[in-house]
Image (cartoon, rainbow, N blue to C red):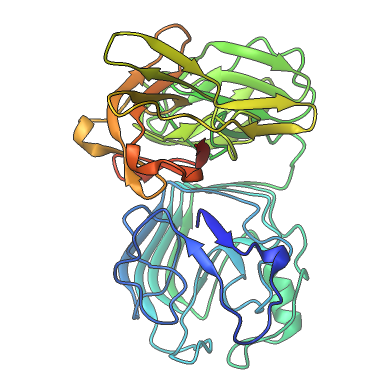
Length: 402
């Protein structure tokens, strides 16, 4: 969801009220009453499959703070663990029959889980292996509102929620080579410096957040193939270290180590992120703009203005009928695309012409996108920019068109 009109703060939240949503993906296949589309190729949300499920593998995920305040308000039926298999009937009631079969959970990194990290429930045959778990059972009773009538007592659930890995009402489950620690003092979180996502790309700029990082002199990345290499450090502060993911790091879950501290991150060939003017990953874009005229003249324009109170968009002029307004966006994790045909940019309701995408050329890891703003957007005002690279959607930033 890109925007909501009127905003939530201005809504009465009463029966019969209507509001408008702007989505970054056409909701084809959206059924009446269905909140998200489970088969959305860009994986914008989740959903449910008609089960029972079989021959299912869950791997290469970084799951952090999955169960937090407000998340499990419907009870433990879907919030017993950060990764949890469960069966429900058509009325969304938990059931202990019709088990799932041959379920594998492997190669995931689960951190800061208020309940269990991994829980198999109602599974016949499966494997839990090679997962890294750091910090589980941190707050087992958090928002424990309702208990399904089918399966366990509240006391049993609370006891279960303190266990990092467990299988209940299940048969033939094996667990092996899972690295489990309760110590969170040495945990760092890693994400894109542009989008804040824990999914990053080869050669991109990322940030590690933690404490006592001010003396950092070395950062190593151990990729999914077990290859460890030192990487280039960009910025060091007491609570943050910016560095570059090696361009030859294998895709998959990687471990980043800084001294005695470590954290996990998911590496892919692309992980599009766009910088915003205020460095939050949202709001007005960190971008440049210029009008290119037929006579060869170039008229630069400011995209934003920033002060101590934040950044605001500056309305961009489109120029005359023969002019072209070009916006230059900056990001990271973009350059690994396989073909320009797999890149698209939408500004507001219009498809923008892609002029260039690739390395910025001056700064390591920094990528650049040049797009022509469609003249049809004249007078559109504040509009979102939706960038998709190889089926992955970047964080949404905005510009204003006069």
